Image 1 (cartoon, rainbow, N blue to C red):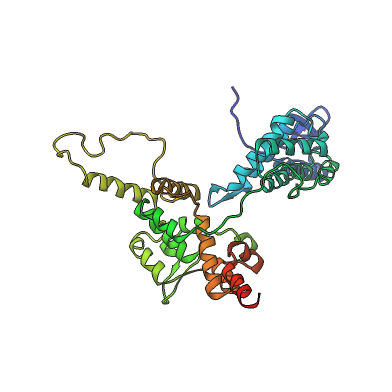
Image 2 (cartoon, rainbow, N blue to C red):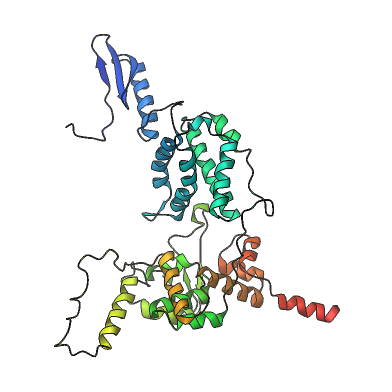
Length: 391
């Protein structure tokens, strides 16, 4: 059996015709007289295009199906949508958006996919029960697939030009439901939930509520990211959602938030402050402290654990694991489930009420005030007061 390699195809000579050639994806390409500058330039061009196309044949093909197009596109998407060595949420969103396309038109020629087919895919998303905003974003991702195919010269440009004529769903003009706006969560509800959370997760909630940072910024917080030279500390995450725009994110940490962090700073500066493995170790220690069976009887500590568990507590929380921990606390507290991003809305609303919109914009790290208004709810009590005085 031949050994599979990832070597670059060689510049070769066809002895019968004295022509140079190279074989790419099973197809032989003749380059001109062997050893000539023209043949070497042609070799460089063909191999460079072939490598840029993920070692796939270059050029449009009437036989290319949508399923094959998705497979080739996914090779690029897995490299593009990665952050800090981990897949971003865009990878999962792309999978979900392309699944109806593959199910309905996987064997359909990619060059024949048109606006009507895209509307059929959109109707399937509506039937599944997706929200209108999610459907519009998913359709944009489907268009991105075909835009990539045009850029790689796999399908004709007319395909994406035709797909661009399909507009997004408008509010009230489709059967797709609307999502409820994300509202602040009451502090009383937060405190009820914190009583039923592990101490480490409860501190994460407290820190986020005081600083108004994003959930992911709590999860990746490290001692080395902190500037503790002043009375107000500053935290500059090494990664944030607007870094690709060249912007810098600064989170301000006051005395109360500093008090939360103090117990998590005596560690390796490069490790996360809030680690699931620490929370699990503390939980096991507390269970052992509550043990009533004498140590000479029953199981020895650690003897009843799986040798190779499917899931081990890691070195860093993800936004999903952080959210799930809060939901479990909500269930135990008997309150309606809330997600950590609502803490950011709560902090923004409080800052806007006390210090104004510009202060809320600085705290949230937004470049435009209209974005901040999405997070900071207007204080309706001011409207009531005005109406009471002048109305």
